[in-house]
Image (tube, rainbow, N blue to C red):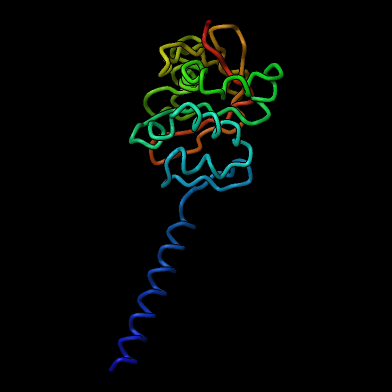
Length: 188
């Protein structure tokens, strides 16, 4: 009887594992920074696995924004890559990560976030409705201008600097990420 229960329990555990693995395989993932981004995980849970976003993750932690980006949201995040941060003047990232610059770092990071979930189709529709431009209000209170060049989606910040969306529609449980090739900044 004990052997039969043990075998039944083992069989149930295997079925549960296979079912869970099968569910994970059925999720429509997008590869970012060498890692699969799972729609069932939140923004932070996915971002920490991208080798292309280690600077962004460090900045989010230094700014105290982890809990916010793990919350229900939904959020649209324009996520700069490590290469995007590398384009900033030498020493900028190190300076921003200092505790005394936390408020400035929070402002810059939340300038990359829009409340609500806007996939690339939603943004393209807003651009069309706006006759070629869509004004996106950021969580920091600033504005990003979205526009298209051919099929490519771009953002222009309040200083006239543009960033290209290199990977769009990375769905998360609490929003969507669009990977960008530059850090955008609010008017200072």
